[in-house]
Amino acid sequence: MEDQSAENGGIRVLENTGVDQEEDGELFKRMITGHPLYGLLIETHLKCLKVALGDQIGDVGETNAVDDQQAYSKLKGATTPTSPDLDHFMEAYCMELSRLKEGMEQPIKEAASFINAMNMELKELSGPNNAYPADLLCTKK
Image (cartoon, rainbow, N blue to C red; front, side, top):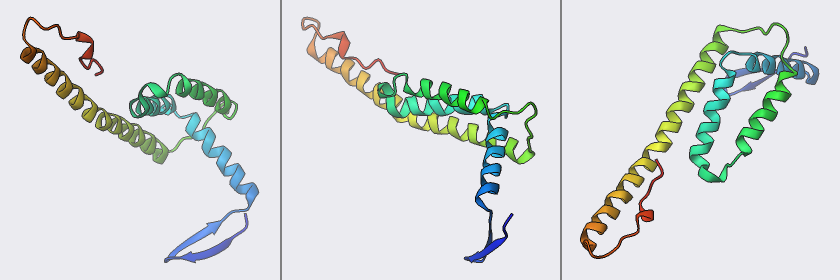
């Protein structure tokens, strides 16, 4: 490992050679993909994407997740080292993604509720003799 240091705002940064960085990267990939919460992390991430992109995401996210799992399964060793720091990070990341998903869903639910209330009010104002199409109600929840 080549020890080249650089001062950057009072923080000393150690730079690795390319080979060491690749080895570290492979080790990190094995640690992350071999972690028990990795599947949950991918699933939660896809749920966030589905909320953000709606119908535009289609099957793309699921296909990519399967491809990612297949690609990273080659990196998994028989024994995958784990650390308390990684455990904490994975738990925190999953929790934050869940909170993000809930935060993104809240305005959508509020807007759907408002639209349904306005549609019902318009239906009441139009009277019983006027037909009001039921398909105009917002049904996405």
